[in-house]
Length: 460
Image (cartoon, rainbow, N blue to C red; front, side, top):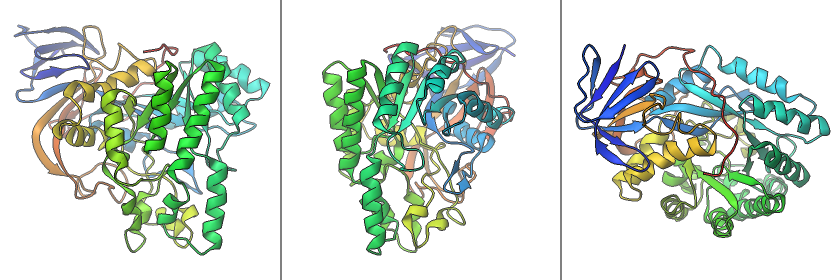
């Protein structure tokens, strides 16, 4: 049925204005004042912002790690994302040495098809760069998987060497793909980790102390240098500290194609959470680790100035009971990751817009538009415009609430933002013109989400 969103304040990355939005099928077909449409379903957005659906560029759903599997799969994770105002995710498809890239992608398609409640795409991990793998990348890009991930950390698990990264950058330049890096010096971290364990330092806080910000800054700088040498393009995921921001800022000043993402946990939480007693600090073990609190304002400033372009959740949920607890007595065995997909949108609004750190338009750019542009989905997604997908969030900024495991929708037994008071909440969410959340109730369908075939990289 044709729908009319009436009475709201439409906000895009560039404009803020009062208007009605007419939706037919999956698309926006008209935007204007007092649209007169007969026989349509009217959605009242009075007093609310009308945002483009959030795009989360960084999720790990149904992912094996550390002898276990994430608590949220493509059904529970995308449902929680929708409650949080996200209508599209890009998930990481893992690969292993000796495996064809198509085998890995087929497995990830099987994880998502029939389960995802919102639209999705994939990034593809590159574990090795044999001649066969480099050749296979052309088919991958033609299938609409136009971003590649290289890990510089997790030695003997995911970590690739500099040759692998450099070859990936060169091939990506040829094919029109965007290379992403997890930028931490895995060799240094491996040494510091072994040293800590030998000295009997086994508590969660040592996860952070053995992954110092210098190791992130060094790896970020090294990845940028290799990108410049290859004359390619690079996206640094989950930037957590000033050292990494500085390297990205310097590269962008030179005009290099370097982009950066941070996450809500680095904007709102700090290293002291890993010191919580009774092993509670394990809830906050992810990589890179939480940093000293002063880094938060550096990250906010980088978002405001455009040094960093996006905020991803790095959703990678593990239950505290039985999963995080695998690391009691040895912090290296704590599964890395946290449940963050649902609160990304609201935390950025509440801590960013409401606190005056970023503007409304910057909020939309960071949570949706820039990701759509960097990852080949704009203008179909990432904005509200005639012809764009009707991925729309009606967001009430007047609501005040407290984030808690008791009220979240992720399939996990804790919330890292537990007790945090926030302003604003998505009340109604549409994906391609269909209700997923209506008046804060899930009305979507398991399996309704579609795979998004993304375009090749273009400099935004």
